[in-house]
Image 1 (tube, rainbow, N blue to C red):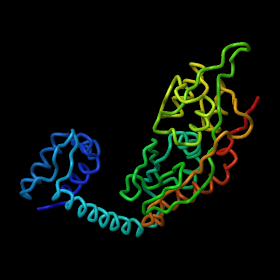
Image 2: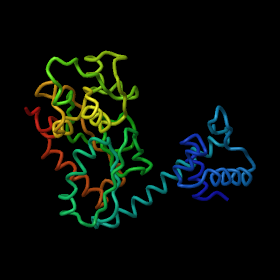
Image 3: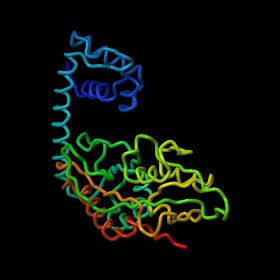
Image 4: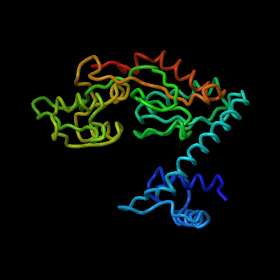
Length: 293
């Protein structure tokens, strides 16, 4: 018989495309996932996945079951959301996903004030460039630097995130200009990387990284010129802003939440606090502390 554990196994393999990826998602050993899949296929009397080019590709029967499993998952999440809405106490865990620099420079330093207001809410911050799925409850709230183009989430613009060019403060007169460091190719489409490449030229980056924190460390320690959020670069004593008093590039900050949990007490509390704090700190988010001396 099909049960919820079977659905989780099926969905994890379908979404990750490998047994190892599914095991990572589920917190299981790969051998356990393989054994559970084999048992499910035996019980159903049909192969659900074929291994093609090291990827688990669903068979025709597997694709049908995956579609049905996703519907069952959504129904279960709806029931969970309804149960959560019945508890109107602002207490429990809230998972916020977002870009690392935004979470570290804006959200994390201000949580003390949040807990003064809501001491019974535990906050989990998940940093990364990957978009966790709100619809599958991989995160309760997401903070993104672009407006979503699809999905069943409520999206609200809460501010602007500014970026500027920074370099080592102690660069001596007469020395050759510092080399360039930027984001990896996956981020070539974002405004801050486009601005950098327009100045430096394609193929001129000495360092490529996926994290603003890595670029900041390289600028301080290796003397690179890098694009950083203004609210991060302006507060680094070893760096100075090179691109002028205004941000060189700006991106919109969007808050996302699944519509079915928007009014759960703890979720609503975090959302209201984030919106309020972003409004109060709008100048800081856009232009940091200013270029300084």
